[in-house]
Every structure is written in structure tokens, then in C-alpha cells.
Amino acid sequence: MKTHWYKDAVIYQVYPRSFADGNGDGVGDIPGIIGKLDYLKDLSVDAVWLSPCYPSPNDDNGYDISDYRGIHPEFGTLDDWKALRDGLHARGMKLIMDLVVNHTSDEHPWFVESRKGKDNPYHDYYIWRDGSNGRHEPPNGWGACFGGSAWEWDETFRQYFLHLYSKKQPDLNWRNPKVRQEVADICNYWLELGCDGFRCDVIPQICKTFSADGKNDKNICADGWFDYIRELGERSWNNYDTMIVGECVGVDHKMAPNIHGEGTGLLDSVISFDHLPWSRNFRLPRWKEIIRRWQTLPEHCWWSQYWENHDQQRSVSRFVKPGFEKMGAKMLLTLEMFLRGTPYIYEGQELGMVNIKLCPDEFMDIQSVNMLRGAKNAIARFFKYRHLLMRARDHARTPMQWDNSPNAGFTTAPTPWMKVNPNYTTVNARTEAADPDSVLNYTKRLLRVRKGFVELLKHSQYTDLAPDSRRFYAYRQTVPDDKSLVVIALFGKTAKHFSLPEVLRGHQSRLVVSNNLNAPERLSDGRFLPYEVRVYELGR
Ligand code: GLC
Ligand code: CA
Image 1 (spheres, protein in one colour):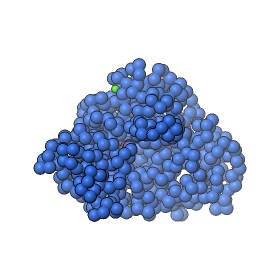
Image 2 (image 1 turned 135 degrees about the vertical axis):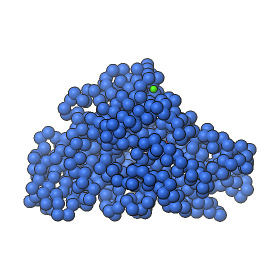
Image 3 (image 1 turned 90 degrees about the vertical axis):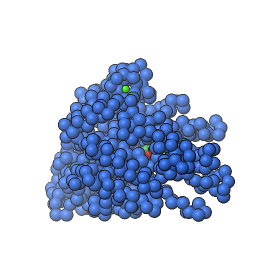
Image 4 (image 1 turned 30 degrees about the vertical axis):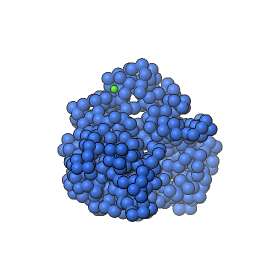
């Protein structure tokens, strides 16, 4: 049933709250997305991953779901969703839904029932545990991702329930076969409706093992995980032409080959994390080494490469020095597009959107808000604030910048749900569409060029051509006895000379794409501008 279409695809991630507001209430919605389908088609992306649009109390902006089969009224109706599906399919694009089944919202009827009594049929849908040593102390030392303990005390049962994220996101109990059947049913519901796959939220964490003394408790691919994922594949995912990509928290390149890839019956692809360093810790050789590990996984593996998503700061702000945003944005996109795997573009990345400077009370994300709230004193708060100015998830969630009208054309409401980045007057889709040298027009060109190399990239072998260089990132994608691709990029704000390594000499070459209009047509030694990138096709 599976054609593995995702190996040809570039995926565009839409964060529905921030993409486009169709009804003028300040919040992005599905009709807003539908209005932008021609924009997406023109960009030539192949699929859209839609962040959660289900009913939710929005403690974590939709990653706390209270009804897996509905659409949040603020985003529209199921009919709107169907129109989105049809609009995408009519344009030859696929639709990937976000599957958030490690936890539900505490307002999901299952959890409401679960709290009613130990004999309630839904009680065992969640993870209830006694305090450690029979006392009013958390069963183990796990912390919640958004601060505090991962265990919340429930006075009625005099027990704790587990929440690896906020306390409004109780973890489901995957040991309960009924929970697993519910998840399969939910997947089948959306697949029957015509969605083309799932991005599986924090999927390695779904099952947990608890040890007698609490010291060897596990929540990453714990016992049973492989069986449960295979079971889900058999009951649902494998019976349709799906893409199943896991957000693989806690998984490194050594573990990854065991949990995904063609023929494993597990996930199709992994979204990893270790290639996204803190900006101030960024060291090019180290970064290249991490990417090399992912690029040289066994043949059956399939990476998901991305520099941005709704949880990350903007890539330009992370990797590029101020003043070089435009060149840097193009360079980063280029590096990403010629790695092996499925590349993701996060909304606005194609425009070169950057981080926003927010005041402490302008952060909206639960993680940021909790972090500032949890600061013990003014100094701690200052450092947390400084951290958030770089790292907050809010940076990715500012409204999409469509044009230079008020609120960047995102909404007609006087105030959008989240502040617009003031640089929208120059960084926006309409202005960029009219500028041949814009990041947007470069991205369009890049994606079209990439299509010509999709087959090569499916089978290519990756070599880092200058692993120790602190300024150049140069890699080659080779198919034995066939042509190859060479990508060379300069990191940093001063121009620098690149000397061709011996292996690259004496080949026929052709410039495929570059962010420097004057880049030489043939691969050669030469001076690179700050953040310049050049891609060449080489003969055998
Ligand atoms: C994933 C999501 C993130 C969310 C978390 C809990 O990491 O990407 O936005 O907060 O899971 O669902
Ligand atoms: Ca709206």
C-alpha cells in the first residue's frame, strides 16, 4: 500500500494559529489557509503538515486535545477541513495531520471519566500511581517539560497522575489495549477522511516502564514500544499510502536505525534534535559532525531535516550574524535542500523571518510564561528573559508576514492573538514576490531545482569535504558511477577563499544554484562572499 512518496517531497509546516486569519478575529484558521493554497503551490512544496487544529483548551496551543475527531471552532469546521484537504489534493499536495497521543487534554472526556472513580472504564486510560513509599511524594523524579514535577496529586484518589508536559496534558496509558485501539481508530478516522499521514508528537515517549525502586524508570522507547508501533501500523498506518514521521525526542543517531525506516514496520522517518545547537554554542565543525551522523545512517533510514518548526527559534537568528539575514536565509535553505531525507520548511522560513524582540509580558507560550513565573528573584528572571529572547518557542509563532499592510496582512482584526514582528514592512510575501533577489523567489527557484535531484538524493552517499573547516561547510552527495552534487557554503561575515579539495578537481561541473548572482559557472577555487552558497552538479 505504501509508495513512500515522502521521499520525493518537501513538506511545509503550517501552524494554524499564526498562518492566516480568514474571519478577522485575530486568530489564524482553516479558511485562512485555504486562501493561501495557490501561494503554497507556487512555492512548489509537496505536502503540508498541519499542526493540531482539533478542539483544545489551548493550554499548549492545541497540543492538548479534547476531541480527536473534531476541528476547534476557532479554526473552522470539519467541512472547512474537507475543503482544505480537497484544495491541497486538487493541487497535487498531500496533507499530514499532527497526531498527539502521548497525552490528551485534562478536559478530554476520557480524563474527565478517569477521574470519576477507580472502577470507571476510563480510569486506566491514564497513568495513576501511588506516592513513593506510600507517602505523598511523587513516584519518581521525572520533571515536566514545562516546569515542576511530572506528577500531579489527585486528592480524591490520593494518587498521582503522570504528565510529561503541562499538568493539563495527562499521559495516556498505552499498556491498556483499549487506549491502543482508540488511537488506531482515530488514525483510521482521519485516513478514511483522506489525510495522507501523521507527524507523531513525542512518539518515543508513549510508553513507560517503572522499576521497583524508581531508579530505572524509562520513558523513551520503553518496553513494548516496538510492539505498540507495529500494531498501530498493522491496524491503521500501513493500510493506506501514508507518511508516518515521528518527533523523536530522546533519540540519537545510534537508536534511530532501530525505530524507523523502510521495511521496519515502524516509523517512516525521524525528526531529531541534536543538530539544533544553542546559537552561542554554535561551532561549525561540531554541527557538521552531527549532520554527518544523520546523513550516513544505514540505507533503510530516512531523516527529516529541518532548521525550524513551531518549537524553535528562527534559523536565521540562530545561525547567521546580524546584517546578513538575507544571504544567510538563502544559504541555510540551500544546505537543507540537498541533504538526504525529507526537508521541512516552516511557515515564514521561505521569507527569511527572524526572531522577535518581546517584552517579558508579551510571551504567550506556556513554556516561556512558566519559565518567567518560576524565576525565584529579579536576577533569575533577567537571565530567563535573556534566554527566552533567543530560545523561546514564541519566535516561531508570530503571525505570518503576508504584506506590508497593518498586522502584516495576517488579520483584519485590530490586534492579532500574538504580536507581529515589526520587520514585516520589508520581510513579507508580497514585497518579496516583486523582488527577484528576495528570499522567497530564491526559495521557489531552489525547490524547483531540487526536483531534478530527487532521485539522486534518494540513493546518494554523503561526504563532508571539509570536516575541520571552521568557516566552510562543503558536502558531496554521490551515487556510485553517476553524477554527484557538491554544496559549498561560507559561514561568517567576512569573505574567504575556498580551495578545492583534490577529489573535486578534474570533473565536469555545472552551477545549479547559488545566492550569489556572480558565482562561477564551473566549480573552482575562489573567494566566497559572507554566507554565500554554491551548488554544482558534477559529472562522473
Ligand atoms: C511536541 C510539540 C510541542 C508540544 C509538545 C507536547 O514537542 O512539538 O509543541 O508542546 O510536543 O505536546
Ligand atoms: Ca480566525
